[in-house]
Length: 198
Ligand code: SF4
Image 1 (cartoon, helix red, strand yellow):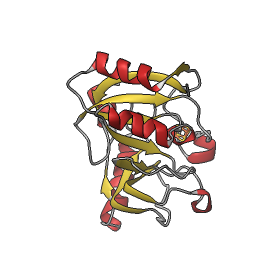
Image 2 (cartoon, rainbow, N blue to C red):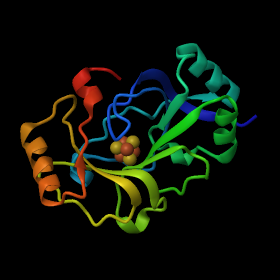
Image 3 (cartoon, rainbow, N blue to C red):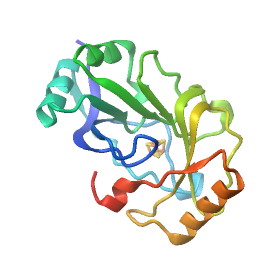
């Protein structure tokens, strides 16, 4: 049976994007095809996703049900979940009664069937393969402009980059200014870091 390399599964509130504040089980996939650092991207990757444990779909479903039998939304995150998420995974989780949101850097085209797609580009536009989403979100450090958006999405979000768990006031002020200048975009702060939840 196919297995997926999973870094962690936990129950928490979505802290960013349009679905902020909603309860979800988070399935964090191991591995990523990008290496975001201050030097290369203006901000450091904030997740530890290298290690993982191989799990089948029934094992993932069982763990999600153990954690929160009352919750029917799962967020697929990473690392880069699009490196592993396939149609059998989506169908298996749907058959188990779950709706699926995904947070991807957009470098891999997603299979059909996901219920909510967040693309947060971390590369040049020509490398973006997933060009349709519910929301597009750019993480911006102080002084970084908004690139031309090639993602077709209902919601366009600017997320100020944190330094660890700290949101630098200058970065926040920069992102507020970006949104005021280009009001098609909206500010999305990583509230889970301020709420001190995973
Ligand atoms: S794309 Fe996301 S998960 Fe991958 S290294 Fe960059 S910030 Fe981290």
